[in-house]
Image (cartoon, rainbow, N blue to C red; front, top):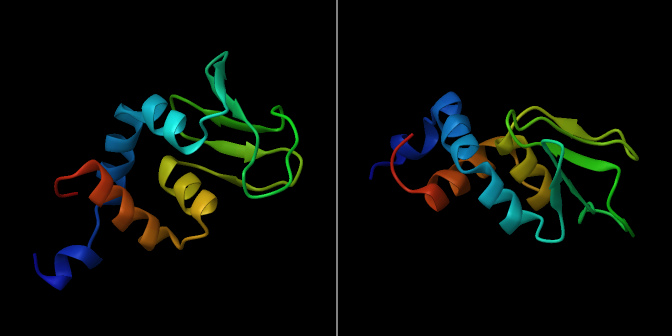
Length: 103
């Protein structure tokens, strides 16, 4: 694989691949969470969050927000970046690797 293939990522295609298996990704990323009314509700592992409730992710769209801090994003890629302290492009590269295949 040449270096260019790692720098050009189709973010829209990657987002769709993530959304196609999003419940299982969320179960891996936030294992203490659960789906309630179409949202994954979990403790935010990036802060001292003692109980679930303010950190919610829409399972269908990937939009997420921590209502206690105001942090938010619009898709699974931004969520993965946020949870792992990565830049968007780094998160996209890791997700592409995790999901396999070219996007």
